[in-house]
Length: 227
Length: 325
Image (cartoon, rainbow over all chains, first blue to last red; front, side, top):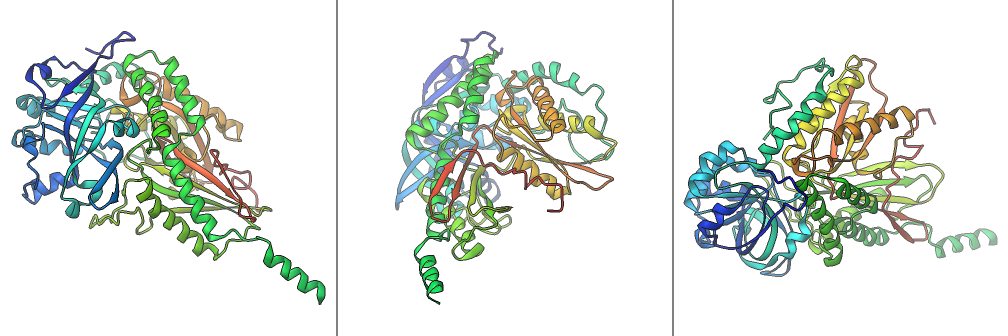
């Protein structure tokens, strides 16, 4: 599945909302560029919806079906006038528990973020909802992603959640690249990479002692993931 | 009598104090440059990695990282929107004189943090840990952090600003002399397993390792080692320098590229700092600083001229001294 030759990264442009045949055709490792509307959300959004049982004041069902785990660097030059020069994702694994309900209730087909989730989460909640996970590339490409943001269309819960956690509705054009980490079948690009890496990585432990002082912990083997 | 008056007049006319307004203006400039402009040492290392990486996914990521460095400078945008937790390292000459003293210095640094949070903009990451209250200016309880060191026989002051993320890449472990270097290597590999998978710490990264001291000191030194030395710099102790090189090899032959894709481009450099430890212990801190290395330094002279540069020059022989004086 992982492309092997030097020129294999395929770049794909998609206008939101995405068509079903486009979802099916996306392959692990494809670089996707989005056009249309994307809304942001992280701890604050999930807390409001799932802990405080509040409905967002914006109808996020009809925005195009793409959500982004991030908070943009926002410049408010005068009240209500926003400029977004840069945007970078935040790690998505923390939001995995909200996905089954969130994806179906709000009609989400692209989750954009950092680092993905496990293929178990993908198979249980992404595949049934026809949702693809797109990971940002390198994670620190704020300036490139900022270039794809045409403007701020709307903002919600700014007062309740602050600038960093508010829901920002961004109008985007050639917004990317985002890499397909979970395809329509729920495969994970990262997990496939790990299988390959482990063959080289795990033998490096040979001959190195277990630390004299142990610690309680959930992860007991370097082959296991911490997320 | 006449001579004394003349001298006092002379002292009043000539700048001998680093003025608060100079510090405020230059600190704003430091934050701006740090957020936007990648230091040359890091950029050159990533360029080399991109030209040598053979895995297509890893290579694609490295090429985009290089594109992003250029875009940030061209568009005057922060290179990464997670502008981290702005912090300062002040190295103050023993003969330096600061208008308003240290309290005024700290106020200028806090003011510059708030000002540039709005003007660049930086992301207002700093919140109260319990209430999550956000002042939207990166200033709050113990924020921004300012660390101090001193330098003998000089009248300048260096301020280094670092914007570093704060969620992944940091680890601490109490090792013992019996664990030794092999135990340190195992800890190094464990930290790779934890933070390089899926690229959680945003590699290629500089890995800073603090060995010895106390728990807090080894963690502090690991962060300084990751943030305040240039890529390519080796520790002045030959034995430590050799270990740095060995760990760079180990890290780049562990199978990882950027984002945890298969590859050989994970570690920009390894910097190790040592501190005298308890005779029974060998505490170790590890910190990774991502490829978006936001750091810049300004030197303030008594005549209120300011020189900006990329090398923090934090680890001076005096700072690493072993003797009483």
